[in-house]
Amino acid sequence: MTLPPLAAIGTVRLELFGPGPAASRWSTALWGQGTWGSQDWQDVTPQSLNAKASWGADDGARGVLAIAAAGTWNVRTYDPDRKLDPSNPYSQFSSVLHPGGKVRIRYVGAVVRTVKSGIIDEISYDLDTETGAIRATDGVSVLEGVAIPAATAGAPTTLRARARWLLGLAAIVDITVEPDPLDGDPTVGPAPTEQATVWEWINTAALDVLRASWLDPDNVIRFRPFGDPNDLGLSIGGDDGIPLDNISPITSLVGIVSKVIAYDVTAPTVAITRTNELAKTLVGNAFYERKRPVPSAAAWATNALADLSGAALQYALGTIRPRTEAEFLSLLDSGMVDIAHVNITKRNQGREVLATPIEAAPRILGGTFQADTLTGWTAGLVTYVTAAEWSDAALPPPIIPPPVSTQTVTRTYTCTADSRLFQTSGGSNLGSGAEGELPVGGYQSTKNRALLAFASINWGDVKEVVSAELRLTTSTQVNIAFGSAPKIRVQRVTGAWSEGSASSPSGSNAVVYPGPAATSTGESVDSVTRTQGALEVIPITAIAKAWAPVAAGGSNAKNYGVRLVSYGESDAKYTTEYWAREHGAGTRAEIRITVKIPA
Image 1: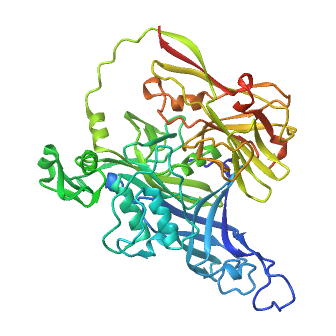
Image 2 (image 1 turned 60 degrees about the vertical axis):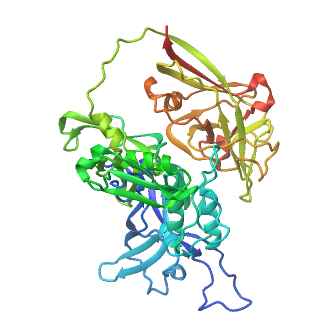
Image 3 (image 1 turned 90 degrees about the vertical axis):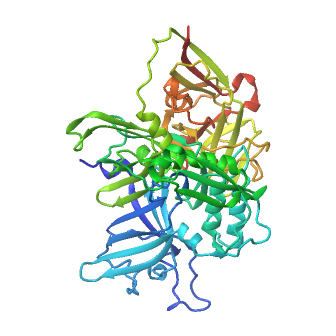
């Protein structure tokens, strides 16, 4: 397969944390002379490197019991200048070439994103071949390295609050926890009765409420319900998806149980048992017992058994080869229990058509990223299809009723919430949910983004989404001046947020810069007008289709609204500004969706 040029999807950069190349060194610095270097991330990329790192769970057979694995990741270098030789005292980076130092791999394209970060475990260098190696441990390893006593007093009773409390108790400052969702942080069971590591504590609490937990590339602990998978619209294979070298379906009896036993916190000595008679014919009385009490034992046992009483179908995806930055970022944005749409119609790298194509929507449990300065970026994913979903797929296809007569209508939805996200020139992150303007882009060393919510979209009778457009009105340049070539990206938000009540940028607003997560999949990039008070119409059909139900040809993704970001957030030429909904009814943002409904 021909790889895309590196420029199409960005390059790879290796960074270590420490003083810069020009910083004074202990061996030469004298008191009163010179300036001690400040600590920061240093670009130490050698002439070439190859890096491979994994994230999330490494086995899909455990289903809802899957836990993100700790591990090491490796970087191999060709380094004739010996920049990364730990024995070279003349290396400009000698002061940071030590085990225990921080290391990260970054993607560098139109945007710069962290792919993996961790702690250096081992550095080696071969003088003969001029090659080196760096082995690092990830943040999960750090969380597994700190033990917490059993039933420590003061443990919070909800999932994310407990995780934050544990990080504070262990004095771990480089890892954070995602914000609480709008529907609240779920209540978990009591603290462990035996000493456990921080990561064991967190996963124990997550399993109490059947949540997956993992560490994202920015060292943020995230959670997602196994029963509520997140569809980012990630498409792999087929004519339009990200190219894939190969795929191997796998299923086995490993992990199957016929009985699940759980205990409720209200009656910790009373067993709640759920049994699957069909599974007993396969594995006998194999059982899984959740010995520690959970908040709702009956619901826990029922839901766990639904996933564990039959064989899951795993898809071992071969090498995934993104061709564009958007494709790579969509892989990087994926997390545990996200859905990947896999469509394979050919084998032998496209030379032979399959009689029965593979069309699946497995759940992601983990994956790998591999970077090479010569050949670019590739990825792999660990995925599985639950037993219940696979069994449904094996049933005879339903009888399809005759098509329903439809009519085409256009519906308008006015913005129900919006917020300005603002970063000062000094790096402070602020927000304002009651301000009258929504600047987007860079201005005088500050950065601006905007969030828009449209909570009232009706999909009940929609049979098909024909098109959709976002309608915005430019302001009179209240906070910023329009750039010479304004250009924005409209992206679908994938995380919950609330607009807040600050009328000017404040750190106490409910949402602040950089705001909730969003996906570049299906984004709309648009060059916009420099005219004040002008109506701007931006097509966002792909975003609306992602929100639409599956029956209407959509992905049933949760509607958290859209994010407006500048095409180049640090370049003032792309900057613009729109009226917020607080400015008045005549200038509020709208979404117009053209759909087909029954006639």
